Length: 295
Image (cartoon, rainbow, N blue to C red; front, top):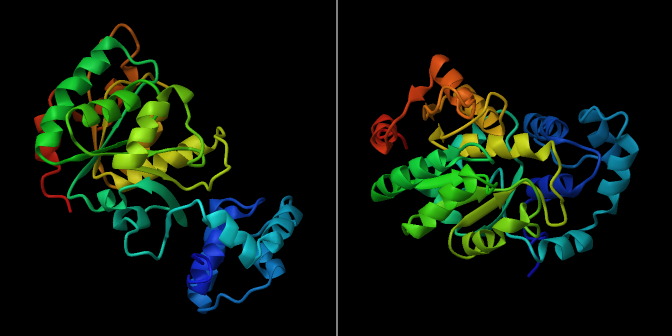
């Protein structure tokens, strides 16, 4: 099947940009905004680099983009399932954030993005037994309300949220910071494979992309953008979960924080979120009540 050639010219361009080296999401969005404003998709690679305001990486981008012929793109897309920013299945809430992904690659049930309510559950990688008990208490109640969970497939809280959702026959979405041919961390391979088959795993990175440090904040913005609300179960003062929570606040989502031990420091991030206006959450019903009018 010729996936690439059947796409509109602008979707073809978005995919070529996604596979190109030397350009980040901000540069890609400068190009897309120019295309929308001028109603054109016929630009030379030199013009694209100028619009994206590339300097240090200009040659890398131009060389990479020029090498992505239709034939090569067809070959790359053979193993990919994807939706672009202009696809009807692209999450409307994600469209509203700053510089959302131009392309979402996926494995599993893409219709989960259209669930009536999606709640992010995030927290510490080095989670305590307390965090696991909280998740095991919350998840069954959320599933009774047909709430889909979303998290980052990391160790600790993320893993437990996905795992408990599966155990209670709910539905869950994972967002990863690499291509869908990688499982990071490797210890989550069984969970990852199960979610790819029967749930949903998303990435804005094509196959072959290894996880890099700057990919994780990008992953966090996707979780916050898709979710109707985000619950932080356990987080230290400096935590990736707090990045997700802050982004969710910026996007106008409800943020729930579970209080914990005031002496250990393991929940200090949650306590600071509560002081900053997050909803203090001691049971799943609080999440259900606060988000009942969404979508």
